[in-house]
Length: 169
Figure 1 (cartoon, rainbow, N blue to C red):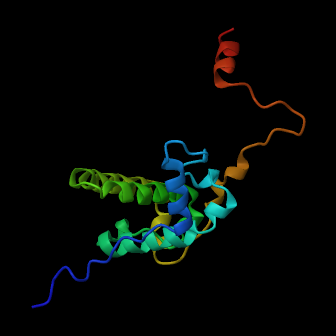
Figure 2: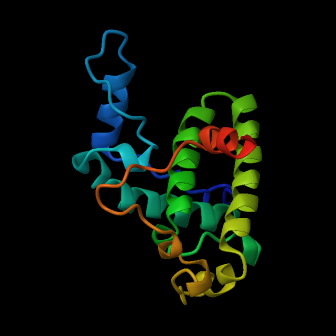
Figure 3: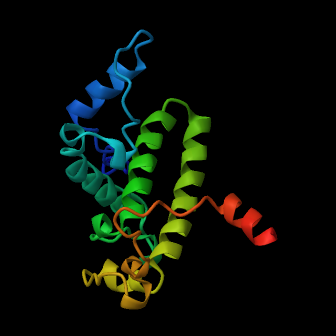
């Protein structure tokens, strides 16, 4: 009799460089005071370099293990949806931590379900095309380039609280 659980593949291991970084950060008297490894935008170049391949393998594993419905598939163009990259990184590191005890594992699965909801909300109708390999950039009417940039030498706009006071007179 063959084992019905033999096809359950292991979760992808983070890159060695990232594991070393995490270990250095967790030492009580650590001199490493860098960003959390899931904060992709804050990582230095040497730490960000191995992340795309690992996170891609995490996406493939999640799709293989959990994506039984089209809306559960993380699209192959996830790197072109910046918010997804941050979410996938946090989810991947959370899973590593969660599998230290069964109760945390159940909570991770709830987090995964909430991730799917946020992913589908973020992708909207474009998600269907992205999932079949037909990614299109953000529609022109939603381009962030429409936001005006401050002219060179101009001060940044006041804080919202300052504007509220100004409008109140």
